[in-house]
Image 1 (spheres, rainbow, N blue to C red):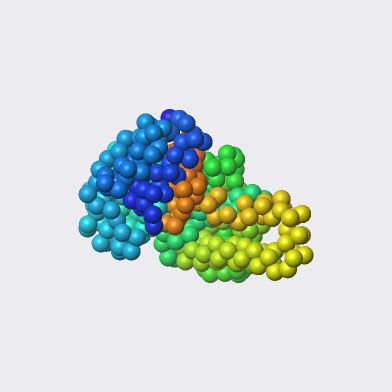
Image 2: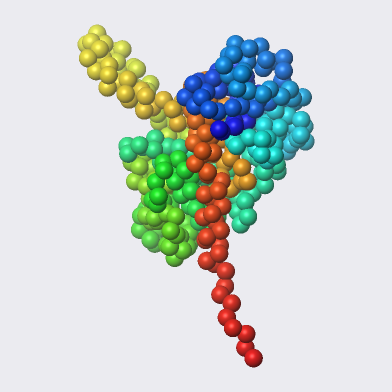
Length: 348
């Protein structure tokens, strides 16, 4: 049984989206139970509309809801210990929940998660991993905005964590991992990226297969299972892809309604266009995963609808069911154990 902790006040719509999203997720995973945190007067009237969900949930009244525009430092000062965001994270720390899902302020969620759960041993910076639709299916891209910049060792850590997530999500034994770069040649790119490639290659990690450098167009192609980059370029890539998907959808709508002949053609090609719309629907791949923490934290888009929020819960369910945290810890331990110097016999 997977126990999901929910910040009901997160996102642009709060409980009006989070609770219906949880009801949809429960239909797909009837064994789940929920711990819900929010402001009673706003949440209970919505929860009462979903008796099956209410029967599988325990609601906790909170004093504070973190605003979407609050700075992380402000959110920590005002919401530590008392906000729906903090208390839903704390449920994972105390072991009452297996995963926390929130659509709240990304900066505040990361700050509170780091402060409450702490980072894993040997991890200097956590990362946000996004699930990316590709021509081959889905890939994982990280970091997409947790921290700006990363040195070679941090990029290697991201590769380890992304590989563990790929094994948990895709259930493959040895996922392929590539470093995002401006070219595939070894002499190209920033020094930190080139050094990271050398470190990963020399580490000869048994948990993943290093495929070398990949370029921006390889993300959509699905060339590798995991694409590793630092947060600045990763976030730009993510926002560019989201904007391009909306742009293509807009072009298609305009083209299909421009003339009578186009409308008739749409009728015959409706099945193909429905399939394309499904691929371009951002609600199907919602849910960023905070990696490198002592607990599983899932970040939903703030503007997500109920179906999208349910998808984020699905990601959390899969991560908890397949032991994401333990996989990352094991991979990190194996790597760092191999880096320890060998102690030889004492010299008399």
